[in-house]
Amino acid sequence: KEFWAPALPEVVKLLEVKLGAGRPLPRTPSKVFKISTEVSESDVALSATQAIEDQLAELITRKSEALAWFYRGCHQDAKKCISVSDWVSGLSSALQLDIDFLNYRESLVDLTPDGKIDWRHFLSCYQVEVQGEHGKWADAVKNSIHASLMKQDLRVSEYFQLFDRNGDGTVDIDEVREALPKIGLSIANSQLMDLMESMVEKNGKLDVLSFLESLQPAYKGPPLGDDVQEIMRAIEVTLTKGAKNMLEVFRKLDRDKNGMLEEHEITRFLGWLSAQKPEYNKFNNPALAHKLFEAFDMNKSGSISLMEFLDCFKPSTPGLTSQVDRLMQQITRSIYNNQGSL
Image (cartoon, rainbow, N blue to C red; front, side, top):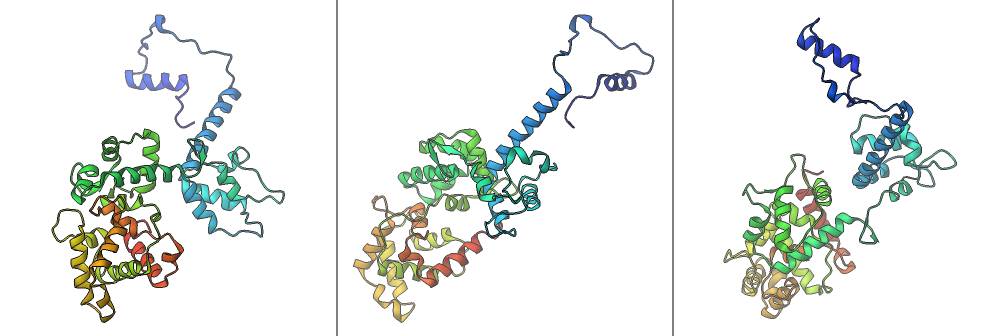
């Protein structure tokens, strides 16, 4: 109601203050609008309530992940249900609206027989359907962008030219909107806005590497051999020390600074790595270097792009994640890379 126009008597008073008391108000008889008497106050209130409920449904859909995170931390009974007050607290925290959510509870969620709320069922009612398949549409959009970038096989500088048009080191929604057609994608503006809202920092932007890393799905390539996994762990141990992110690790390997990794650079690196620790001596092997290069070069283009490099360091298969030391390194690096979000 705070956005409704004031009543006509209030408008008259305001005009009298503006024009001076006692002065006749200008009237234009030819432009008199009659207000229909067929619409009752109850109809207006019902329409306003419906508009608010529709808006709440849209916001709940957008913020479902934040709500799930909040509700997981609430006290839950044996059936994993939460209290109504916790349900309201979650909405207030995630949606950031100063309204009484209890007024709209009946239209948003049903109570269990004991007066609790099954929050998982509640959120499942606000899932977005994309192209006939249920799931997180944001992940589908990210996968589309990722797949298109993998086909491009871009150099590091080309990623920045594509997504960081003004050269400030960050990505905003306008830059992504302009970049997508260049890689053969067209995404609805509303979806793009929601996607960026879930990714950006408070200032509305995020750095280019964080944007690229957020697109990475779990590794879906062929199972990596034990020897390749061992080298990848060695890379993490030796190169991530002192490096702010995986882009710096990539650049350390990119000796000729052309924004791509070639097989001779992998071979040279393994030669250097073999001298760092006695247990690494076995890495000085051209056949092993070729095997590692083949694992990284997913699209078989003859060179390794930054996206391919990041993909291989995304844990997925049990063979990778079962290694305790590798898992701990992944967690440590993720915490470091996501300090702002945390």
